[in-house]
Image (cartoon, helix red, strand yellow):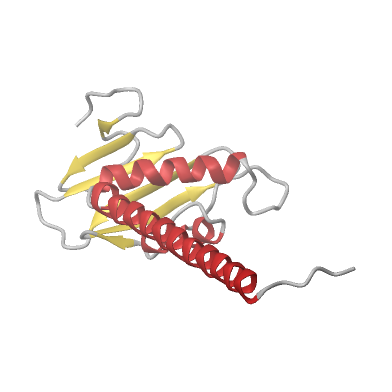
Length: 162
């Protein structure tokens, strides 16, 4: 035999549902704000400095290879920034190839090695050029493109790198 509910019970039930909905909306808003704040921090701390952006790119390439993010059955490195973005390991902003006055591009990539560079968009004789490869060591050279023979600028093993 069904129990008859009073109008007061119905109001309480509706109030509970509305309260639950409000809590969900507030919670999702807070999570969204934290996500956006995290993205802004990434932009401010990492993307403003080419050597840190290249270190971030090196970690993304490692994730891409380790987890076969393109799903082709071969643990290879990504050959383009767009491929890394499609795999969800870098942001669209980095995938655009231009950040904070630098142009980023992957030079080469296969199943064993890869390399990328960050080159200034406006080149002067004192411009810094950056290079990174599968070693994750960022190298730099002033006034000319950097390569594997350039001076070590930042290393993941060296906390006291520039």
